[in-house]
Amino acid sequence: MPLGAVPLPAHPTLPSAHGGQHDGIFMNIGAYTFSQFHGIAEEFHGCAAPGLLIGGYMVELAKGMLPEGTLFEALAETSKCLPDAVQLLSLCSTGNKRLHVRDLGLYAVSLYDKKTGLGVRVSIDPAKLYAYPEIQGWFMKEKPKHAQDIVELEREIEEAGHSICKVQRVQVDKIFLGHGHMGTIGICPRCGEAYPLDHGPQCLGCQGQAPYTTLDPES
Ligand code: ZN
Image (tube, rainbow, N blue to C red; front, side, top):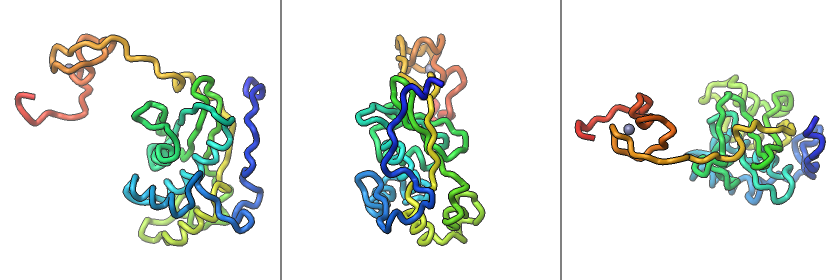
């Protein structure tokens, strides 16, 4: 197994077997306390969604397991919340193409060396939620939103930290490495906008892939 050749260092604060309290000290989310991250999440995301708060712990856990100084990219397996945790806690964004979203409906994120694709995948382990009924109810969608006790849910998230996570070493697929480049740009004969010529004789929008209908007659 090629992965064995490049072992990732063990993280000093890996989830303990019993999870939970961490000797009475709540875990920070990287450079932030839980309540600071709560505030930042609110500002960026519109609300401090439970998935974003947990996502903060997931991203920091993954970051801590990469060798120091690794230039990494991120791959989120859901489009909900988790991509925003990555964007808040790293330099990876969809805009700089260092954050990839492959929506499999799985609450998992991988951070990996952008050159080799070697990295760690962090997910929520349902088997570790038994001690956290509110997290379980939220994560497994066992309760409608209005029945959630949000205060207790957030308390449990802070208490659990990354102890509810599962970590795997992964080799991320080649298609997520490097960015290729756009090739030659030309002007679309139909709409007059600039587009990558290898998309064909017209831009993809004019080839029927535009995700909208124009409402102004002359545009
Ligand atoms: Zn066009």
